[in-house]
Length: 357
Image 1 (cartoon, rainbow, N blue to C red):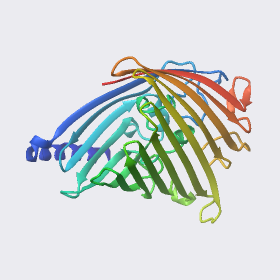
Image 2 (spheres, rainbow, N blue to C red):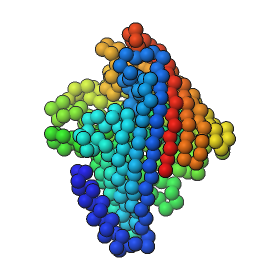
Image 3 (spheres, rainbow, N blue to C red):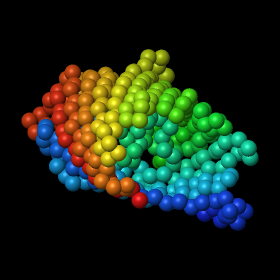
Image 4 (cartoon, rainbow, N blue to C red):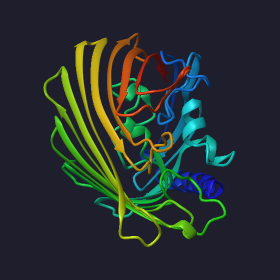
């Protein structure tokens, strides 16, 4: 698939540039973020809790993400290719092959209407689920929430989208390759489907609904998964921001069964801009996955975990950001690895510095 994307990209760019050179643009950007985290539980394998897939190395100066991106846009065509490396890529794309495991994003899109904003995009796309992405500097909190780390960051397939002329409504329908998958090697094609609906009644409020319906296992062990994500962003005033989200999902217990396993996660994040260069954010969250559909925990242990964090951001320049965060988890049962065994509480500190070009 990636070969086809690259061919489509360069052929289409060449044609569009010839036809509409006065209204086409090339853009590039780059992002890098390094971090250091100390887990006071002192896990033996230098990796923090197993249900986190970002900023999860203990006592190691690490690169979470180094990414370079090139994009091209014209009136009827758009494309983007982004390659990346870092611990985020290692942990989130470990099931991909050597090539797609370095692809952060790669897609081409075609405008289907001359006067309306109908677009068809195909390739490896950012996930339509959730309000958090891998680009740390764009998020209120330094680390990602439990709900973000345990739902897709990316997807591959087709996206049909529409933006209303007044920019208040956005609608997307998707056919994708699975739950955070670029490819499905040695398996029959099993399309999964989803939607995204965003409503922005004003410049200070947006509400989003997203879904996923499909099977993420081999057809022999087929289990249908139904998932919904709801979140809202509210700018209370020029300094205060509130983000609230809720994930809920169901999956068949066995192939063909009418009985379902269930998991859910709420999160609330408050951001306060102290000055132009200083910001605070606080987060509270909960994740329950009793039957371990999404989150792995020790045998016979139901995953029910509360999380709390507070972080401080300092903008060093227009392109550099320093952050430090304190984060704690509290579980109903012991699930956190430490040097002396499993415990029900976990606390760690993380600092990061990012640069964007």
